[in-house]
Length: 281
Image 1 (cartoon, rainbow, N blue to C red):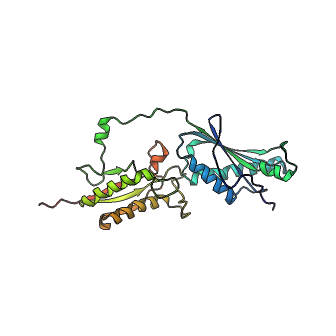
Image 2: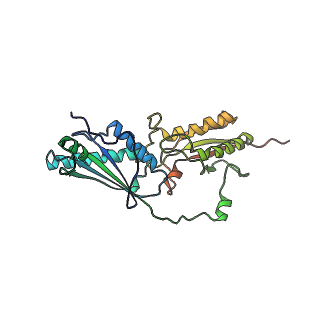
Image 3: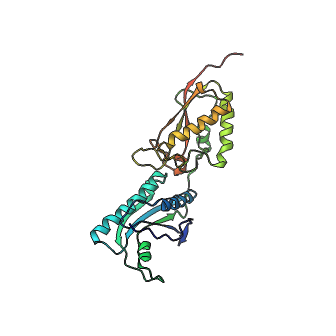
């Protein structure tokens, strides 16, 4: 098997063309498995997408000029599908991917290169095109709605109340928090240490996986990211002094998406399981 010819594989960057972001992934001859180095470049590209409000993503697979048209059509489609799988495993909302198409072979391009194998290497690829949203009006909750919303600081909590910790935002593909969310978790921990009457389950969630599967934790390579996120919060609360008798954790996978920005599905919630009576002074 001939080795893949790589161009600029040691780093990745976003390429902007008329408000589009493009990335190309290169493949070995007759293969549609993503080479490890190319996968690392792709993961860096995906990571750079997290701060972008995406309108749609298109994925197009290609082959070089060798092979029959029918063979190249199938191979190029398999290459596109393999890239879609990587997106799915890394919390990119599948509803954003509007095209996953195999385009067959590309004819040899006229470039300043004498080695025909290098030219063919550039044609064995998948092209990813990301179109950001230009502008979107977000409807904010009214002040009355905010008052009705129960939080960990609410006085009248009861069994069955579910509290969304909407300011605890996780890094995509990982079980640890974004830096701006760490002070929020500290305040929550301080409150739960004092509120000894509350017993609860920490529920971890992920976004953008298919068929309610859990997402892959990039650090451990295990498909248990929702559990890992819940355990991250559990371990933090335990360290800060919340009794383990009062809490447990569970992964909810992607069973309960919120329906808004995908970043808010990378979340944990607290389900109140019991409220003990406060002892009289």
